[in-house]
Length: 417
Image 1 (cartoon, rainbow, N blue to C red):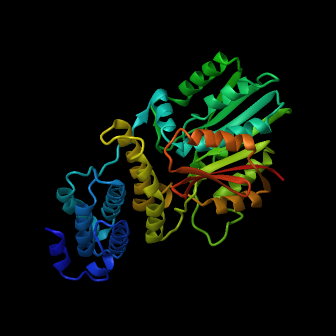
Image 2: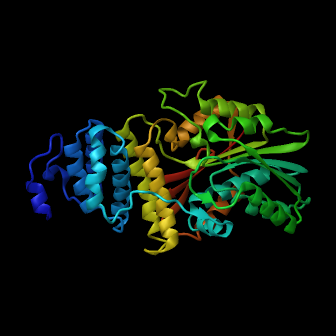
Image 3: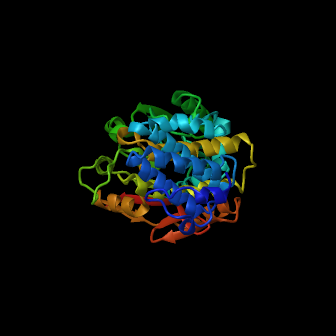
């Protein structure tokens, strides 16, 4: 069926006309179609939802341009949501034939250490946070003979080798490094194919090769309870500089949308527990977006207007058909499906914008500190290795990674008041 035939079909209730939609291939049109489809699914209008899904399937191939691939990810997520709700369960079967080219099951890749290191280095998405955080940490622990790092990182300690390298070259000699990590139980990408015990052994050996003594400890703990077990077991000895490094992990601590930042929410309680440890520095790095709304359409719009960025950037550094590109986009699809198709405890992707985290940290009696010129220089040098669309801006004390002027990832540093 061509485009003119689609336009001549009967008007869909509550659905814009072709005139108001403009071109079906336009990204704003795609967003509108997704919104109307989400509304149809939520109102259990299987007929309307199926019609819109059919259109989306024809204008958003999984191997199209970045906007088409983005839309395809949301299409897949809406089908997954529809499959769980009332009479819309028939949509999965109905769409199976139309979506033969779109695998509905998401199989995230399990990385080796070497593969994950290379994968993370492809883009500043994580490297920005690593670079800014390491510079702030080095300044905070200057002169300390024992540095205790609690690493809550989505990327399985991939930041630590660079930090060890920098610590090893300290003029006063390297400190003893104690590294404590939470034994992750959630299957959140990127995933690692080896255990944290094996990872720890590799990190200890790497540190030894740099003449740095390291102790590694895994504490089985989960974001689902605010890393309560880890907080309880972290013991800080006299003379230790305690570093809390939070890299894209805190948004997995459960949090329902609240009109104000509550004094008893899981995230607030976690930050207060951190404050009780009296750390030398807390570094908080995360994606600058809001996926917390209880309203599906609000969440869809927010996610759609943020997650175009990784699809857009991938075209600058990975060729079509490459395995790394497949892994990269599968991880984005996992995130989209979690935001759109799941609710309750299963919906773990609950990003909050920088402004809300700043307020949370202040409420927990932390004071923001500025990143030094060394940090800014390091970040700028790192960005020079990547595509021209990446940028850096300062917002008060904080650093923000941008893509074509849009906020992507923020880095903040904090000390107890």
